[in-house]
View (spheres, rainbow, N blue to C red):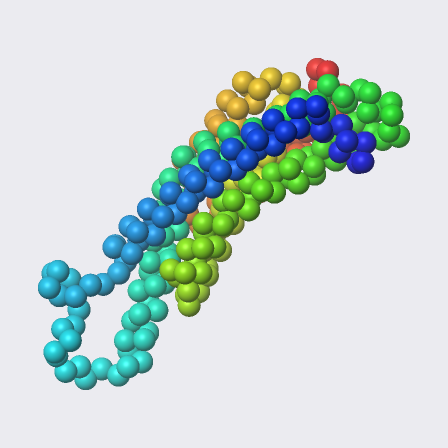
Length: 251
């Protein structure tokens, strides 16, 4: 693992770090834009305003016979409805997010997987390990390299849930976060595996986008989507293990 980690760095480290910072900024900005517009739409659709705007409500001069607990429960019902709509509005932009995350994951991983692929044979001679074990170590390092990207896509959701949706049950927020994280896991596994097997960046990006769009266009905003994303990731990892075990990669 130490040798593989040292191999992942090059003489162009500062340039690669700059690319990673740009990719993180773009992914975070795109997520923040989608999250911001979604919470705005959800607040309009799921909220209630005063009757002067033509929406059901109560005038301040009217005497209400309902208890304060009723209005407290009504307030939390509105927030729960907004939280649910917020997740669905974010999900409606999943193709945009998939594209951004795919490009970000490729920018993050390309220098590492490129050097790893051309160093597979020397690493096998320098380390007493198998090709399967080496490939899996590289996959683990891929998740470590992409840790800033994972944090950047969760930060806008955490900010919204803390400052605009505080006090609600976090079922919808947890579902939304789980979907985005499982999507990024799938993209990470796909980018890493396809480039290790094929060694071509164009095919890697094309196949990853095709897989992301194919799943997102046929899935809904529910926990089933999370399980499908994670199941597909495990399937790709198993396929990579079989390919590495049989040594059918063109190196």
